Length: 406
Ligand SMILES: Cc1ncc(COP(=O)(O)O)c(C=O)c1O
Image (cartoon, rainbow, N blue to C red; front, side, top):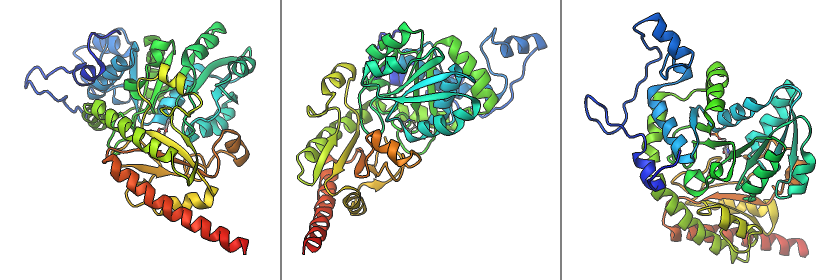
């Protein structure tokens, strides 16, 4: 659906319907599981989907519906479902297209949970998966098979910040009648619009920037009405992956400030990436906003901002990385991202630890890689913290080096 408003106005005003009786501006929290119908016929109309409405909490909720309509509008989809986690959104969207005997092509440096689901659970149901370097269109085309039913992408990727060309990949997949799913978590609807570029389904971990306060786990799937209706009824509803009213309300609340939060995350990440890029203790910095990023020009063309996540490798590898992280005072060691606090983690041992070492290294997730989710603090304070921890880690590395050299 095309909106006449800018995205920041849409974030606040779309689907904002003051309560008819009280005129309350914030949406009502409706915890009801059951809904009463005046007649059996009216109940049948709702349960069959002939009429929009709620009939049982596992298949939909009025507070959650406000959030779903908002997310659908923001991503430019026909409809959306709000679910209990980003992983619920990912598994639901994949299972919408896949059944026993089908094949899925997946970008190689994908979120660890997605990799785990596709390598551990999906094969038990007869689903075949290939992880492919999706920066290489020939490799993607070669990986497509007669039974490929979906192409699954993540851009920028977690944790290597690889950028994929959504337009070209979608055109290629569509020429083989293969639909495309994109995980847009790192970007939010503010910084990247995959559906505008032709993508069929967008998924999000709402746990990150969308809620933005580190206190709700949630996910979203946005796409065509027909697909979303199938997912609501047969996957979200039957597998019990719905989002409850209270958490929907918290996200609606968090969402109101997503525009200004993202602006600050991006501004801070730019300053922090420039600091890291010039630091002598660091061998590589991955941030799409840096001209040195190998896909900077694609990022510039495809994204409306470069996001708040930076990855980097320290000279001295894993051991120096651990010393660095352990000496941080402001940044917190955490598995999540997109929160007001600056969060740091070591993908090889934390978020991507379930990927076998050989495959992890092939995907570019080296032992020395560190992921930083740049928070909303004053940029100078974040940089000072990184600087002091880098100095301590480098001193320890050099002392050990000198001792070994003796
Ligand atoms: C890119 C990406 N997608 C999906 C997820 C899964 O989200 P959730 O933890 O809400 O299930 C994460 C979690 O970190 C993520 O980083």
